[in-house]
Length: 84
Figure 1 (cartoon, rainbow, N blue to C red):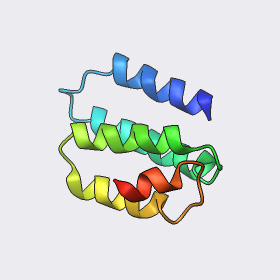
Figure 2: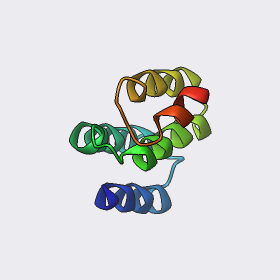
Figure 3: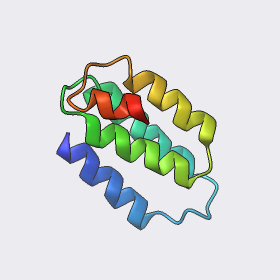
Figure 4: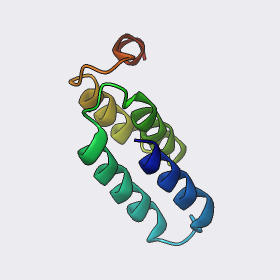
């Protein structure tokens, strides 16, 4: 889990977001991360990082879709996700 989070943070800090391929690349890494580790009971930090990034991109439909996905998974902070 932490490896994915560190890798995503590295990409966010090193990629030029003004380039058209940057957002799809980061989104693809997020999708790979949640496919590999998103079902883990302690995957909340990964999901929250994904939600926050999509919110920063202005993709509110994506934010809603991510919350729909995370609410179908029994994570450690499930009740906090439900309240949001």
